[in-house]
Image (tube, rainbow, N blue to C red):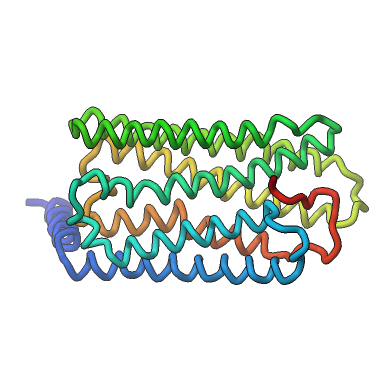
Length: 282
């Protein structure tokens, strides 16, 4: 046997040992729980700071965005703390709901950011924004309805074809979100580029939009690709205990790191008195 074959065999053996080790599984999922908990606390602190700064505006887009970040990351943290118990929940469909629902909420959270940018873009071009919020609610309603139907189908007839369909739908939803960031983040970025160089805050806002667009486009695209692999490759399955390393890097790349970076980039507090684009959600 050649040296390369021996090394590959040793690596495969190590990988199997890690995947099947309860110690590795528990430590990995608890590390994810801790990271999600930190992000949740950061989002909550920022929400409280914004509320203290502008309490008179009610539930603005910025406040709802941070609140949803807090909810998503708190639920993820709780699920990963109890990950071994979640795997024992019956009927099995509730395992899928506990693991998948925060992912849908993550989509809604960042779709809200796309909506905010779309409103800014349309207002700057003197175009009507009347249809944007109804479209946002309709798209989310359709996505959640389809996902609920897929969960019910999985419960009724848990065959491989239905499970693959559910994962491919999740992949399609992620690709749709990536396209939304590319479309409206790109449009807003190009519009800001055309502003006069001496415009106040132009460079900072340009960087903000550019960085957030790149981060969110990348994380949703990675999620799309990984869900496709997960649907057809058992070795990339994310819904099982014995893939702790795959789970760790997946959730790190598609949720924890992007959320942390976006919260850092958008950390600036709103001014104490209202500006034209700072509207409550109705």
